[in-house]
Amino acid sequence: MLWHIAWRNVWRNRLRSLVIASAIAFGLLGGVFSYALMMGLANQQIRGTLRTELGNFQVHHPEYPADRDLRYALDDVDVLVDEIRQLPSVVGVSSRIVGTAMVSSAEGTAAVRIAGVDLEHVGEVSDLAEKLVEGEYLSADERIPMLMSRETAEDLEVRLRSRVVASVVSPTGEIVYGAFRVVGIFETINSMFDGANVFVTQQDLAELTGFAAGAASEIIVRVEPRDATLEVAEAVAEAHPEFLVRTWRDLSPLLQLTADFTGAFGYGFLAIILTALGFGIVNTMLMVVMERTREIGMLMALGMARVRVFRMLLYETAFLSMVGGIAGIALSVAVVGYTQRVGLNLQAYSDGFRAIGYDPIVYPESTTTFYFKVAAMVLVTAFIASIYPARRALKLLPAEAIRADT
Amino acid sequence: MPVIDARDVYKTYEGNGVPVHAVNGINLQVEKGEFTAIIGPSGCGKTTLLNMVGGLDSVTSGEILIGGTRIDSMSDRELTDFRLLRIGFVFQAYNLIPVLTARENIEFIMELQGVDKADRSVRSRELLEAVGIAEKAEVRPALMSGGQQQRVAVARSLASKPEFVLADEPTANLDSHATEDLLDMMLEMNRQSGVTFVFATHDQRVIDKARRVVALDDGKVVSDSTAH
Image (cartoon, rainbow over the protein chains, first blue to last red):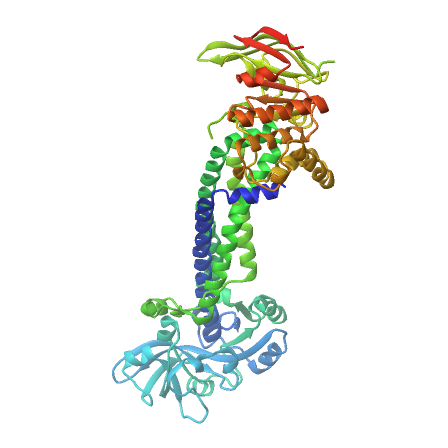
């Protein structure tokens, strides 16, 4: 019956209970939506970067990261590619030759990273073909084709079919020059990536630089699910200790920070909101205890043990919080679900978003596990918030409390 | 053996550094089946005495035995159980639980005692019939008159089958008619079932019905008379 009394007590002052329950509900909505928005942004950035730039892990010559010199190549790369392709969870493998270059047009010059991609397999590890805003993707049918970003094209004042000259440092240290024709212009969500990269075919770059046949600068591997990345990368590293195997977390510390920090920050933000709500709950329950001093005294006088009085107030706080919590979670599921489906259009801030690698159309993300954790956090908040008012109630002396004015 | 045996009981409060002797050496024995009124002017110590006898307040010195058991040296937890199992209370302001119906108010005490559901149901029905408001079983206190609420309070006080019922100004908020009805009902219970009632009261109507009247003044018994 204690549950019964507690539940009915919650509704003795409907307005007050609804006000505090609404505060909990909307506070949770704010916290959960902020978390979902941050997770959506972070995951979009991670997915986008992995799918367009990094893959899940990369294999290099151990000396390569120091100065990204074309001298440090992986030999017989096709054998290694085929071997990695056989590993579980691997959904794509492709090799690239990557060097630094100056790309010049009649109107300007840009310092970029030039990547020679394997036309047969590049689609397995990169979705750059989907980011084209003009022209076509690289193909063997074109002579000396090049993809560059809209940003670089504008800087160099070149258009589709324009010719540009790339100067690249060869594996022997000489500067070699080659002409390329712009066949496609791309635009990703990351303007830093766009400004720093151009793409050509692996064959053209190898011919230009005199790169050894069957060699490449790096192998990019895509893994599904993402959680399997480390396991697969470790398997490759163990089988080939002569190579350097680095996951996306090693390759991009900023991305790692984003992945690790976003979730923690979301929970922290939610915890702050719940703490603020907890003070509201404490205040409400203190008012309840003050208003019901005589009733609580009467219950004690009749023989209700203090521990039962404590439990009754704990249940009341829990019910009050659960009403707000359930409403808040239901609201959050609806709002996050809707925006996850249709996306949140933040195009007004697209320049800023692209500068830090975020897509201006954000799809907030959340999981069922997260909602259960939120529910647990609400219950913990309710428990903590009930302690002080309940302790106040327990200090009442029945003989005095039953004569109280309230 | 008396159901209530107060021996040389003192209660002193510290009021602004000055000791106030609320109860000043009272000896009082109440036998089973009595219908006793403790009377006296405001501040004479009636309620303090009742609270001490009911285990709601501690004594400064002296002994209180209920059914032969000393309660003045019990811990808070022991006193709580003692009140729950052996004493019935009726308060001036009814003090029912507003969110429970009349039946639930009565059954709640039995639930605290660990009485099983079937027995609770039978006993609450019997008690509501005994106090004459069986038809109000499923009504909440706010929808009952003061007299009806006090009847529920009496039924609740008897739910635990206590050794006696302490009633502190039970008629103070009732009109004449409701007071008359309530007292007649309690007298009937006293006569038929031998329930012991001890009242602290100013109310002349209660005093007129009581078979024993103990008058207090300045924390002392100044008279103790029994009607024959």
